[in-house]
Image 1: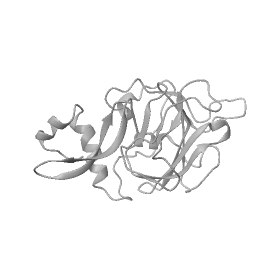
Image 2: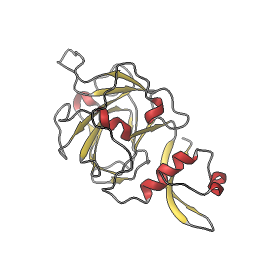
Image 3: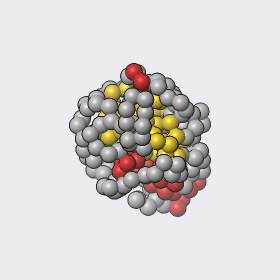
Length: 212
């Protein structure tokens, strides 16, 4: 991560680590990783992952269903990540929106291509897709693009999370285990928006948290 001057603390109520993520993302070109993905990562049902993907002030984030769990239509082909309705969704890497809209049982869904990892991430059952999230748009790391919900075929607020190594892939479940890519998610109770901050030493772009 990038170290920021101590003087920056007066500009934010949030941790230096959070601002560092934003600074790193904004100063990193598309195609360069900004987070660590561990191949072979596996989660367990009921596991609390708040400390992995939840920013400061985020409600508890729990793995509620696994790939392969039985469903009436057959094995579940995604990872379900449960948290409060309306929690904002961002990623720790720059992405390009491949699809954003309604898709059957998925409800409101966003497909995001992450060039730096060669993977497309699907986040389904959203309650809302934010105005910046349109097909073809580049979403900088750390900037919110949707909110957790329970649209489509769903029994409660969560993210149905899938991964696919094919850009534009639309198959249910994707083609690669989603668990390693959970580390790319960043959930927060506040909207993260791009802005600019001026100081006497440097000018950079970073994301701030704005009360809704």
